[in-house]
Image 1 (tube, rainbow, N blue to C red):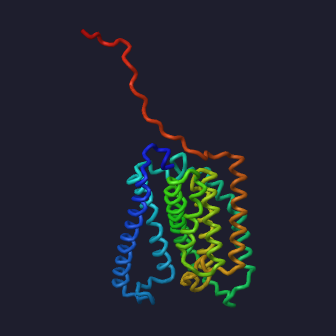
Image 2: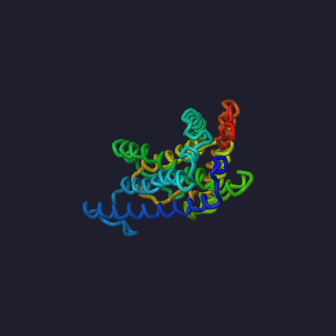
Image 3: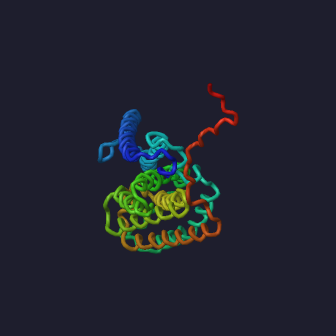
Length: 303
């Protein structure tokens, strides 16, 4: 996408990446200061790491917001220094294709159902299935999660499959070579838990990157990420202190990681089948410089 706008310069993706990372760190620090101030004003206790303890739901919401703020930063980096239409980081059409996003969400229902059923059937390593939190607490948490999780998931997709995939792709002839670096960074960003958890995240990043290229946009990756995270956070919200756990997909045991990989591959197969039927636009149209003005039909006489 960066090359097709006619404004590609080798330094734009590099400068944009540095500025994006710097701006994100600054805003996260500001958010931490604000949370400290709020915690002090409310007189809440401190977490082991020194941050204010706003409760399981409050802490989770803070974490989700701290990731979601990356989304507008990616859009700003696309405008400057990339100097291209902000929608080009979303898809080859320059916008979010809501119809195609809906089809991708539909494609994810079967894989997520498979993942949900398998997760409940797999033995719990802790031996404690957890106590039901109650409908009131669960629905309150679910209302917050339904709002914030899609923003958090979309932000990660805009960073890894949007900005980084296109930034790396600007330096290679084939976009396929840009898929691996962003997938490795995506898995590493979740921290190191188990080797199986890392493998599951790596495959998820590869699948999302490949679908982004094959379908010409972020919609398929966003749909998969949103559904996965809603399932994970929703399941945590259903049990007492579930949202207090600091475990992520990086900590998944081999059984759950392999199930997630199968679900990702099944999702990819369904999306690609949908793509063959509905044929979403895959390639962008290179911009062309304006044509020079036509010569005058009656040139002025010279002496």
